[in-house]
Image (tube, rainbow, N blue to C red):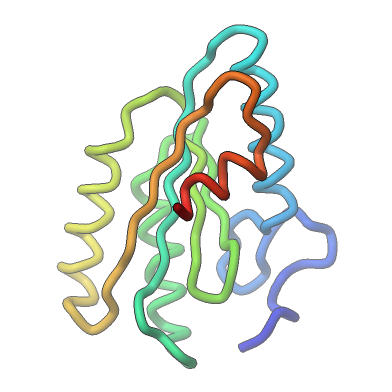
Length: 137
């Protein structure tokens, strides 16, 4: 699997049919601008496979299906890297969503592929890049 699985239009990932990175970052910038204008809350949830080197196409598709099944229509799931997914969640309730994802993942895949979760939330005057970098700290 390689980066050719990402669409050239920047809207969707052709392998998983989730949003592509370009679209995710555009939407993140829109959410930050909306937060600055009207304090509309949102959260970022980053999910990555831990200690994966190659392969695991079936698990990537499993995660995509899981994300589509648990997200609401106003939220966005994207494939950001080969083994990395990003969610933009409208509102501030994300803990129960992350817990459902983790439980469903363990029930379907088991411990074969472990997950890491990172969270981010908007702050005054913070850009998308700074927000994402802060999540990595």
